[in-house]
Length: 553
Image 1 (cartoon, rainbow, N blue to C red):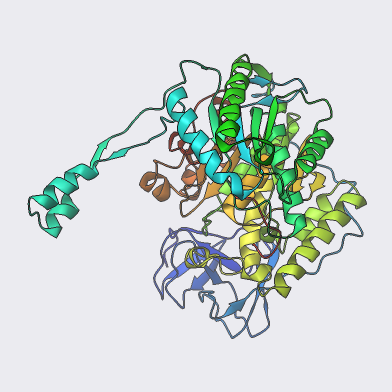
Image 2: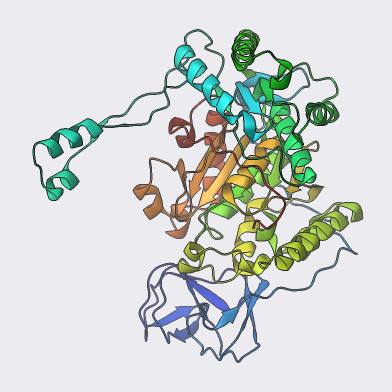
């Protein structure tokens, strides 16, 4: 019997155990004085059963139902898509936990700490100071690209090239008759460029161009949602102002955008310049006016300087993507602890990706502060799942091939781990897509599980920083909000350190605790909020995809 095998049972109710390293078939392992003879090879991140299961038996992990056996599974047997199917508990919003007593973490280390941000007139504080150029309809994308080429090059905001690929050397080798093997072995990484501050507008972090494929031709509701999202981007404290290009005849009308912006911030004084092509004499006139007004806007934006702000001004999005079997054990609980710290300090956190809360609905309902919030969450979840199911893919279809390969066999299993990002505090608000964060505490925001659609939504609802966990690696970023990548395992961090900022793999290795790494991560967040660049920013990863509320998980 090998007592040194690295295994973990997460919750006393669980009838599966996680392998933290590869374990061979016929190995005998011991956990809490109980012996298990493994019936299969158990790859790291996967699970084996603690008892004999027959068809229909429930499988529990994180203390919740995550699936049912569809064939007998012997004690010590590997669970997989061949013997387990997704299943979840029923939930009810009748009795929310409005008497929930929350044990907040010790915040003494952070009570006096501050970050240096951009203070806005409405009292919010940005972690960046950006200018936006936005088309209201896809017909204006080409004009936006013309503006991008003109402004980025001349104003110096375009030096975000992380590396230069020397294609000329391949051309020369080919002309000289080089073999395929020679070409494949050729080193074409010429240099890595450093990001440079704009010398003319040193207080402006960037000009960002939010091109998209919406605004007309689809459902009117999608155009209204797009306008609400764009208004949310303008309203975000990381934005100083915007230039808007409209054609004129599209569904996403200017007055819809203006209405949304006024409802979000009735006293907003950010400069917003709106130009409509069908009211101008020529495209050249439109573009010339856009350049001049943007330049004037940058002059105003440059007047803002970073100043100290308390940590309760942080609005932190909680996101995951490319998750693995370790995400719910290391990275996600670390975010949960940071969320609890921010909430205890008076700040706001936002848990998104509703398809990845499937199976933990009751837990979150029990944490809602009142029946109104609980009912709203329940209604959004059930209607979203019903709509997706009607289109051929309910929540159970959410896990990706990469998730499954790395141990997340069902959506409920994935969700139970993903929900750990929300910590343990009570839920103060439930927000539908594009609704704004207005309350301190933990908020739930309806977004799909799609990484970019979800991070896009988090920024659109007011997040001035986003934490993003990954077990497999993903290059996602956001134009206006810093996205901090957090790896679930050290192997991934070492392999993809060019895109990942912070590692929680020491939790898996038993070297450090969730609380210790959570405090380290919050210190790192303060640095990023004060102007240090994330890996995503260094790489120029500015991903922006509005959600069309059809079938997207």
